[in-house]
Image 1 (cartoon, rainbow, N blue to C red):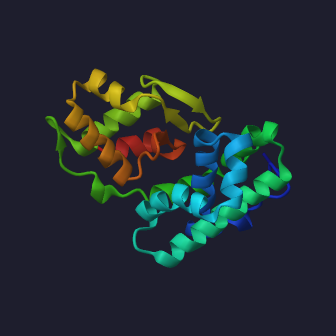
Image 2: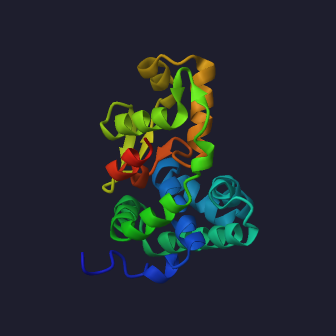
Length: 208
């Protein structure tokens, strides 16, 4: 691709880590967790509602960097407003997919830079957490887990992660909940969304 996918979105919108995370997380939440015609107008008009959706996730990535969290929230809201202003609801998915694919290099670098490896610790059943995360990501990549929507870049949302973990790995309910908490705290997954960068084989192999 030699041209930017949409005229209203350029690299300047994601030229810091905070901006890139704000845009990428907003894009994925809108892609997977929002009903375009009913939820988007509410998120645009209600500052508290938008913050409630995005801020808890951003704080996992940016930890105690309050100014960076504010920048990411502001940029995410600006992105949602620009998307709504310049794109019809029927074209949302295509626009979001195009932006993710065109700027994937930036999104990938920033996302992986903020994965919290320190949260990948302990054991789940008899497996070390990093080893089980590697198995989990490999299985998601191989379409073993039940998925909903999938973007063209490879990001996806899992439909029944709790049940699948119990079935595939023989985990107890307690262990499945603990493992899901590790996946979320490490930023491997949020709101059952698994972003494409953590599904790349290079990243998976480095977890071993």
